[in-house]
Image 1 (tube, rainbow, N blue to C red):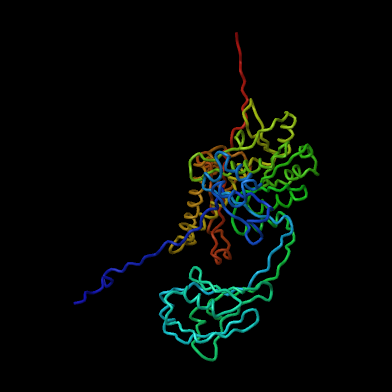
Image 2 (cartoon, rainbow, N blue to C red):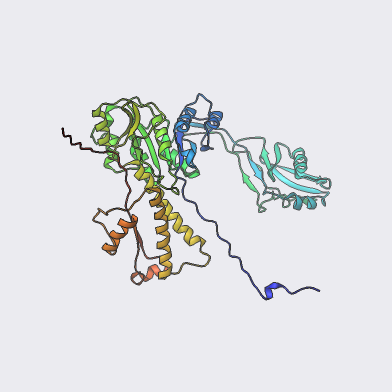
Length: 499
């Protein structure tokens, strides 16, 4: 006797949690090369977790491997904190691209579903165009086919001037020729026999993908900004440096790109001209333009690997950890420190150049405040992304909705406070006295919140929200103030002596 279904009494509905967005990985760093070989315009980047893998791809004596060794020799480095080293390709010179072959690819097939259908066919047929010539295939006895790889072997003998493979569940038919005239057409029915094009998803409209061949060509050199853009389109790196020399005329474009793409780009300058307060000096021009995402370093010897090790050390913060924020001042890097006079040190600090030198024979980084400190830039890029991502996830993971009510707005404010509290815990922000004349909301509450928490969040009044915004289901404007924890770089000590 069948029992009644329990849903007559109890109904349970499961509301699954949607997939959430992840914060940007601030510790993805990229060394950009123009070396052609492993990388090209067709493959813009590769990611690595160790130096041996880089050497295996580029050779142990290559410049890329030398830079990778510098990155991995830095202690600690970005890879130790969940990051990766990306080697990206910038087409610094013209590049010859070989001619390609036409190709037809099926969808991914299930053998358990397709084989039984094929085993009922003893007169399989189709017509396929290879390089402009139609080939008629008929009389295919598929009753003995037990694996789709067997069918690939059979088709390979039937179709001429092309190669048939079965790879990862897909049939791939590639023309033996290359160039613009190289092509594989969709399977079409023949006047007799059983058409198998739809069964194999190699017919037009069945899901097959068709790519025609292209002639060999020479790609013109691209700008460094174009190279960065092409790499960024494939992977969201947050720090980058070039192996190739960055020319003075390229600085402004790269610096502007860095700010627009929330990425830090590191570059080394060498020569006394870069220490001058002169609008023709790209370092000083960058400082005047407040292009703080472009990080400028000085090396009298022209050691461009300074940028790689400096970058590797900067991108080492786990913002989920306590007291994890860093300053680069006095840090140790993985390149030789250089000796500088006080005149050079002062000039570098004035124009916005960090340098690597020694104090009492101890190698240290000396940071310049002129173009902001690198940790401020790095931390704020991370914070903006965290607020944006966490707010999005709040909206995304709410199974019903966040209403346009006080309760709903408070949920948003609570999420903003939660995110900001994490950055206080990491040591990016801290309680303190607000010294800016810019405030909002109740000034007393504003100041007290900054002094107690290090931040203040405020939502606009729902009653004052424009009706047009409400119709578009917008939240009232949320405002946030944060107090930077800063860092102590210098100390003045006064000693009173008495006999």
